[in-house]
Amino acid sequence: MIVYLLCFLLFLVGLYGVITRRNLIKIAISLSIMEFSTFLLLALVGYTDGGVAPIVDPASPVQKYVDPLPQAMVLTAIVIGLATTAMLMAIIIRLYRKYGTFDIREIKTLKG
Amino acid sequence: MSPLIPLFIVIPLAGAFLTMILGRLLPNLNKYLASLILLTLAVLSVYALATTGENPSVYKVGGWEPVNRVPIGIYMVMDGFTVLVLCIINIVGFLSVFYSISYIRRYTSENFFYALFCLMVAGMNGVVLSGDLFNIFVFLEISVISAYALVAFGVEKNELEASFKYQVLGSMASFFILLGIGLIYWKTKTLNIADIREVLKAGSDRPFYIFVQLILLSGFGLKAAVIPFHAWLPDAHSSAPSPISAMLSGVLIKAVGIYVIIRLFFNMFELTENMSVLITTLGTLSMVIGVFLAIGQWDIKRLLAYHSISQMGYVVLSVGMGMIVITRGGAPEIAILAIAGGLFHLVNHAAFKGLLFLNAGAIEYTLGTRDLKEMGGLSRSMPATSATSFIASLSISGIPPFNGFFSKLIIIIAAIMAKFYLLAVLAVIVSIITLASFLKFQRYAFYNREESKIDRKIREVPFPMIFSMVIMSLLCIILSLLAFPGVRDAVLTPAINILTDPLKYSSIILGN
Image (cartoon, rainbow over all chains, first blue to last red; front, top):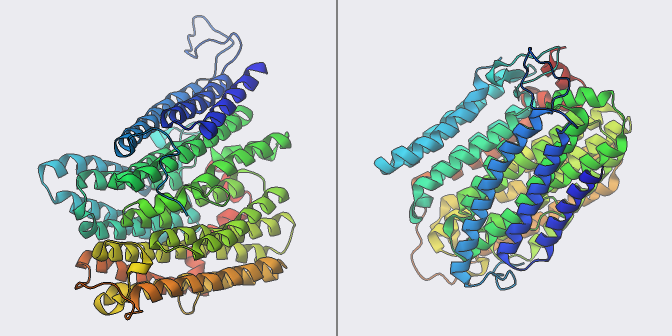
């Protein structure tokens, strides 16, 4: 149970970072922390204590397999996460070129 | 098994790829290729709407048949509700991309624009067709990542800032959704929406599922920009190029937000009274606060963006009322009327809000400004834009005989019949404020010639832009027909039946 709680704690750490940090890059890092805590939870969901990879071999039957579906999901989600992070970084670099700063407080042309 | 289903995803995905490669070799090809792709999809979606009716079809990706009645592959499902949203996506998509032929000329790298546009449409089609929770997440990410890029397409200060905000909030929403999906898989060991329904029917552990429902509601609520999750919408929708604003406001928030909320809460979870009340409250808040935020705006596109929040509030409110009536065991006719009003308004909003954003784009195209105070007297020099935006303004404010009137009328009648008098009164008041706000838009932009500060000659926009706007305004009038019994039975009733009948969806898909 403690691992799940730690996982959730990691999610909250990321959320805290997104809300409180003022540097664009740090916000991106906090988002990554949130993202990976979710991946960790997904990996934990499929974990069975003492389970092995589900490659069925009739010669040596094994009783316990880990669930492969969440692992496939995590792999897909990591690829998606890569795309979002790359996109976010591209925007941050462009923002830096326009404003000359990473400080979120200086970037506020849109309001109302 | 319908052979149509994969085409809705394959055609735009292949189109995005081809536009990138062929567009580089043959300039000018990209715009016609993209228009042709979206036109094909629009025709296909209308055909699907005409043929699906009450008979949903299921496509099993890779041909994986269920083992011991447990689905193991990815299922694509096309039912009455899906085809309705598919029609919105592809028809508004076609008109926007046709409009872009002239509009997007002043930007560089048009290739990327059309490729991203096709990707966004592919993602949205995937979201509405998917019958599998994780697949919804994957397609949702395809469409929103393209949307992030398209919002930033102008790469100026405003566009970049808006895109950054949209990305941070959008990514947080995605993680909430992924967390919710992970938690559901943990308990049910399946990802198929129909199968999850079957597992939950036997279910226990209600507090856990309430937690999951809250997480998924906040995730998809962020994507749908219901208040209090709306912070990104006015920035993103006003900074994007206008055809993209029309897509984002008219289609994206519905396809990846409202559609999924409605689908999950009706067809996957058991409806509970608390959750229905929560959804109705969110809808009411959006409806009221959105319109008050819109009053003070002088930037046309921000004004329209805030109205999107408000009009989505009508949809959520109306569907939520239907949920409350169902959970309290009220008369099913009232629930059906409320949900019909919500879905009808969903379709109408795509038509008139898409049109209004295209009008705003036409004004920006000729004048180079979005500030209402710097306009005036455009009705003489831009007759087509003026006439179509007049139709759209009357339509969004609920003036007969345009479509907005009928959907609002149905929503208000349903509220009165369900004895939610306060909601009915609020809906009327919000509609009046909307009218006031759009009279301001009409007056400052198109009339008011004396105070006009424009001293140069203004010309009407090119043909593709006029064509899209005129077709959209015709849609605003034609869609009124959906209020009348014959047409309603063919289009809206299958969608409502699949939502309100608690076991129909899962029994059709699992085939028992």
